[in-house]
Each structure stands twice: as structure tokens, then as C-alpha cells.
Image 1: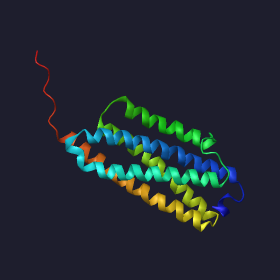
Image 2 (image 1 turned 120 degrees about the vertical axis):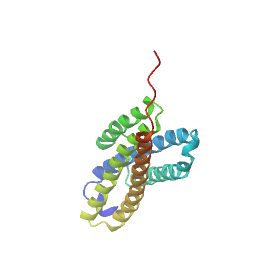
Image 3 (image 1 turned 90 degrees about the horizontal axis):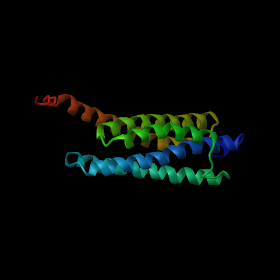
Image 4 (image 1 turned 135 degrees about the vertical axis):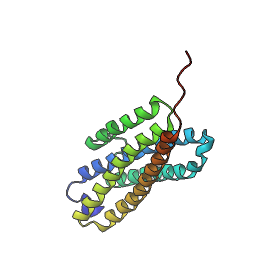
Length: 175
């Protein structure tokens, strides 16, 4: 990360803090979703994959904290981009807190994963432009994990939506 942070270390810390805010939110989102899915017998097949994604988000969190510290930053400081990421993730968290609809949860999680994927992709491109091969490899590894999260959430949302569309509508109330 030396080449990348060579010119403006604080801006790099800010970008890492943004990913950190998203990783922290991701851990919470996956945790909430895991507890809901565990209570649904028909969705038990999702538990292992959700747990793996939650664990990867937690690893991203720990790795980002270590990188920020190594650059002399404070992992609890609010930065320009971390505040932005927190505001974005609050909307997703609000959807998940609003009701206990698992399809709604996956819809909200899809929005979060799209934003998270875009953030890691930005870091990969920036590291490439600064010719920081080590940073690019580390960011690329996490981007590949985010791609897997995104594919899983998309596929699951498609299946849940397909199930909802194929259900017979409820009977109107008797008068």
C-alpha cells in the first residue's frame, strides 16, 4: 500500500475507512438475516452461505482496520467517505429493521452488495493506476469475494421472488 498512499495517505485512509464502514454494516446485515433465515425451515439451505459471507465481511473489517492502523489512521475516526458510507448503509439497515420479510431483506442486501462491490472495484482501479501491485492484489481478492456475495444475493432474491409470484393470491376476506 506504500505506492498508493505515497502522495496522499489521508485520502487513502479515508477510502479504506469507507470500505470499513460498509464491512461493519455488512456484518450486522448478514447477522440479522442469518437469525431470520435460521427460523425459517424452508430456508435452512441458505444458512451456510450466509454465514460464509458474514465471516468474509468480518475478515474484510479486520483487514481494513489493520491497514488503516498501519497507515497511522484511527479506525474509529469519522472521515468524509466513512460518513457517506454510514449514511448509505443506514437506509439498507432501516429496510431490514422495518419488517421481518426475508425477500425484503435480500432486496436491501442486494443494494448494499452492489455498493460494496463498486467500492472495492474503485480501490482495485486506483491501486492499478498507482502501480501498487500488492494493494491491487489485496483489493482484488476482496473484490472477488464481493462478486460471490453479489451473485448469491441476486440468485436468492430471484428464487424468493419467483416463489412469491407463483403463489396463489390470498382469498378476499369473507363478508
